[in-house]
Length: 314
Image 1 (cartoon, rainbow, N blue to C red):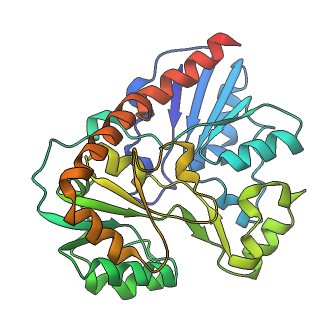
Image 2 (image 1 turned 30 degrees about the vertical axis):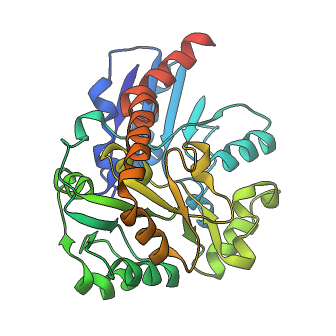
Image 3 (image 1 turned 135 degrees about the horizontal axis):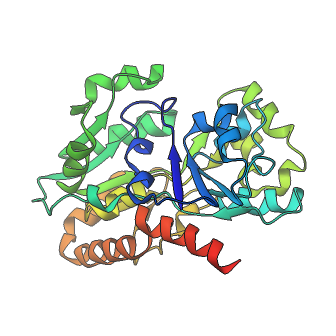
């Protein structure tokens, strides 16, 4: 399976740059996998691949694109679309009367798994700030021996305001993975904020939008689910995933609670961190279980093979 990857429109330093499908690309004249947002806008590229029997696109952002007013339906351009949102996969296949949309996972390249590190820190969060609950989370982890990793470019105003509280800025991917591995706990919230009326109206303009479980709380709570790469990154680093229990719990699509990760609920993050730290010897077994589950299921190589084998079965 040939891989054509164009990440020129992706924010530098973000996870998409390190998935590395191109590491596994093989010459092919009938199957091609495209990855990268810029590939959706290249007429020249579509001309080059138009004769391929199986044209595939891999999407790691769904369902955020439905907040946009651009046409985001991809089955008219591709034979298959692999994406990370289970709710959108079911909904799109239903409204489009197709089976072109396939559930995948947010892969992590095995070459980026760091060597085992000493656990120097209690808890970490890496990423941006996207609302009040993130500010509350940052305040909670700052009660401990924490690390907050973020970037100084391509960030929103709220994240800019929190940069003074960051312990690590603009790390390379290697440095980031090593820092996560040095922490006992990584905090993860698998949702995103619907930021304004325009975003909400774009969601509501989708056909039968309430048939997509990702959108059922968009108007009342201004939230939608989105599995984060942090889940696999923490698992790969042998760091415990402490995951916000929310209205969907999409993490359970990929990992099992109390076997691979632990939930915290709104208002009790401090207590949840304390519980893990006080009984770390018990939770170390869960961390190992999560690492094995990731390694056996969610690497880039595993997804490349899965997509390739799906074509061989059809």
